[in-house]
Image (tube, rainbow, N blue to C red; front, side, top):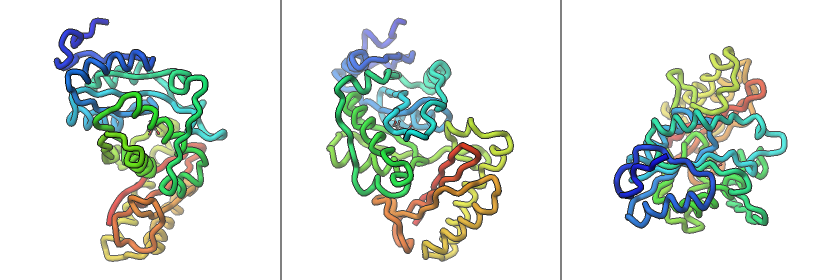
Length: 295
Ligand code: PAF
């Protein structure tokens, strides 16, 4: 494929370029960097939906070139989790990225991300240890390790993550500060369907009946925020309202419900600072998560 920007790195590229090796990635980035172009980055695991594309849009509006990675990272899946059945469709992801105006797709095979001898694990203490960190041991080490590696390879000026994975966003913000990556991490609002369901690659696993019922997760979180807005500050009262709402949906099996400080991800007793109210439910085998922020 001819890269229309090959002669003039500053000209806006019209076509999405795809690379799968670190060598090609760095060759593609070198010309942009030497022209002083700002690089935006959206790391993903593919199965792209409008939520991901909105992250690409955010990166585009802040930078000159947007790199998207697609890598289903085995290190962040537990042995009984859905790594094998995680949806993968590179051709359709590529078409979506092209439409969204991304400039470069990096979709490495596993041995490119973790070459033989790769021995580093990044553990972000504290913020990664409660909530999903307790329920999914090793998950955030896998996320932190792959994000640190990707930041090192891409060296973006701006990286955009979704707020739906709220604890993940807090882990990445902490690791970015601690390791001194010179990247501006942006956490973008969750994109929702018209009925409130947060967009997620895992929504594809829901049966039609489950899909109809799934927005009750967001509605339960809104009920919690409403009691806060009406003056309630005690975490256990707010959590009680949300639990009752979740219990009233027979298709849900409640897996987790937390009200935590937005930065430390530690549980709060009283909402007297910015917080995240987060829940995870199973519908059949599919685990849905969502959260809202207030306070
Ligand atoms: O949110 C995701 O899709 C993944 O956890 C991430 C950040 C791309 C790391 O694999």
